[in-house]
Amino acid sequence: MTNKQLPLIEKYRVKRLEDIKGQDLAIQDIKTFFKAFPRKKALILNGPAGTGKTSVTIALAKELNLELFELNASDLRNRAKLEEILKPATLQSSLFNKGKIILMDEADGITASDRGGLPELIAVIEKTHFPIIITANDIWQQKFSLLRQKCQLVNLKELKDSTILEILKSVLQKENKTIKLETIQTIAKKSRGDVRSALNDLEAALSVGEDEFISELYEREKEESIFNLLKVVFQAPTDKKIIDIYNSTEMQIDEIMLWVEENIPKEYSGKALYKAFESLSKADVFKGRIYRQQYWRFLVYQNFLLSAGISSATKLKSNKFTQYLRPSRILKIWMSNQKNAKKKSIIEKYSQQTHMSKKKAQKYNFFLPLILNNTNIQKQLDIDEKEQEYIQEKAGAIIVSAGLNRFREN
Ligand SMILES: Nc1ncnc2c1ncn2[C@@H]1O[C@H](COP(=O)(O)OP(=O)(O)OP(=O)(O)O)[C@@H](O)[C@H]1O
Ligand SMILES: [Mg+2]
Image 1 (cartoon, rainbow, N blue to C red):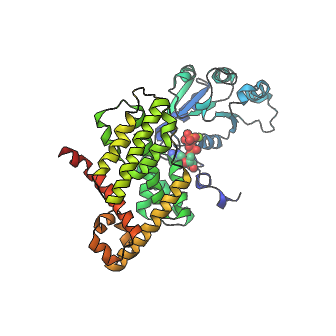
Image 2: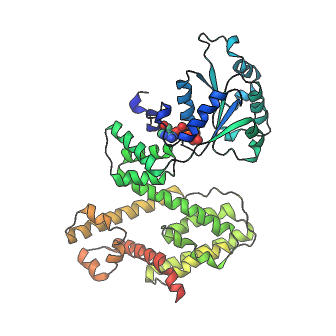
Image 3: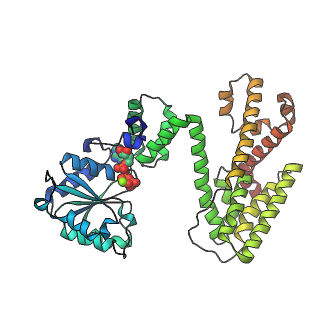
């Protein structure tokens, strides 16, 4: 692979300790550990993803001119290999007889009990002549309590948005590319301190184009939020407040319905399954009436059935972890193609009439359904039946999310 083909996270992986941002305290502690070695024989680098744990270790080995020896869980099961690794430098066959650092990267997955698990790792720490670095995302899990006692612990922190922004800017500069400040700010903010995810997002933005990327980001956000909402609907005890549950998502009620439908069978069985589908089908009936008769008030019922209706299908709630599924892909692609086509043609007509560039008109996209939800305007713009339907649906959804509360208060 040439350098050009490497993903940004590898192409620009920090190589020197001084280039690692926002971890000064941690780096100091790491250096102290090495000076004091073998007072403590192992060091845990604990911290969230993409904060520099692996990079720090690689850079450190280079700086100290030590060979980096990576250990993985299956090595822990291999006695011969372990012995070879643990042999003191003077007995080693290596030509240069370099000292080494043993790296146990991403220890979170190591099992507590099996052979080749934590007990072996602890045995290695007791026997080693070389410093060991263990990286983990969450070393505070119960299973690590003995390991923690054997090691020095250093925490790496999530990076600040502003630091991530600097990293993104410098990568862009090296790539000789430009991108709107707004876009990289969004990426930095979304990354929540994870440099890897920020760089991956930057790469996506560069390859698919900014606008496409931003709308994908927005989709992703909606999905994250619907996961949390579904969990409440399916698993929390039914509460009066449940009818407000969907207010916090930007997802439209019809799409929410697809998500509910897709995931009912993952959560309910038996009688509950039947009742949940009964609510769903009633919601569907109201949806039909809303479309045909434009009776917006029915949105309240559709919303009620999809929240309280589904939630109250059973009193026996589980709290298992459920991996909720996206509504069947094809359906979703179909919907979004349909929507995009209509959205595009509507924006085009609107922009022509208002002497605005399409790009500018696009900015008003969110409000457009409200502006255009008016027969006179629609006539002027030559809006066809399908587009009309789209406008109504969108406008309705906006009204619902903005107005449901008010409606209830009255
Ligand atoms: N503090 C930092 N300063 C500059 N770049 C960083 C920093 N942390 C991470 N990066 C960059 O982010 C990418 C991923 O970093 P790295 O693999 O070190 O993360 P990690 O902490 O080991 O994550 P994980 O827990 O997922 O293994 C690399 O390209 C690296 O250069
Ligand atoms: Mg890592």
